[in-house]
Image 1 (cartoon, one colour):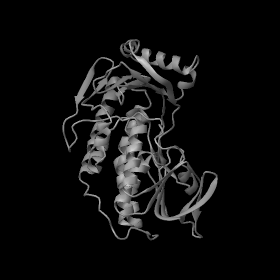
Image 2: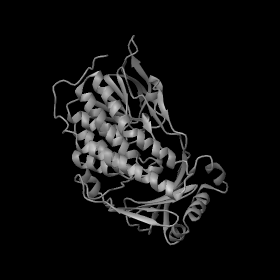
Image 3: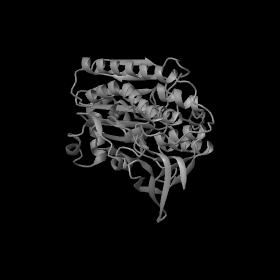
Image 4: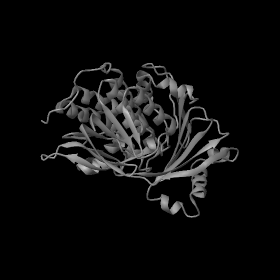
Length: 389
């Protein structure tokens, strides 16, 4: 089996990359060890850049038709004031969205399949194929108990925070965060919210995010070092207690709502930016760039970088891949640093508001960069192989 590109990981970053490459004429194999349509940990929120891209790619209507509620404002709640920011129509975006991941990832996988990508779920990648010079030439995978060798001109790791591909190629961490938060979250019915809601208290933060099926995702975040001690007595009890301590108002509102499903959690992980290109390989999404989930910007990062990487692969040169990494780092570094400071949970009201303004400014710069991109090329006659510089 031989392809132009093999992408490992069929979540939003990998599926979007597969879709864009297939639309440009690449022979693409997209594999994932999970089953089709499965859920994953997520805070769901899509920022303006992500909505702009989904709309440009023609997949936003499917998210809307699925009943994902439009978000037309964001409220930042501080100790002594609430600040509500309306979502102004700009760059073709008049509302934000927060789809469940089982929906978003499935829509992108389906779009990749319609574009011509070969999609295989239930596939575990346990090694890479390399040549004598160390260039990656494909993957070793297991599916249904059968071992397979798949050759490709480029292998793209989109396999998340603990990426097998990143580990196998020895991707170097070039930036590492100092802080991390542990997050507990659940889904609630009978808890209507008007837009995104973020509450910040020194030492903790909570958020309420309207999502599909009339549910609201409510999360609480505390420094990772604090979370294990808070779990004494059970995850659900800790979740409810931390919400009440951070916002008695939100805690009281939960008394009149109904939780759907179990409370889920993420213990936290320091953010990082890794070197994400090399001979015959590249990384996208959390595999190469992860920052604390407290700013809810992860999906937007993933979709942005899927497009940047796809454009580089279509250009078909080592210089283009180097440009992908340079551009990604340029658009990411300030967002990363501000998020890391927010994740410390050691700020005054004035300080965290200043951090939020800085983050908003960087998101605006990101959106302008995405809006300025020329249309992706259609079917091209030759994409790969890319020469080694």
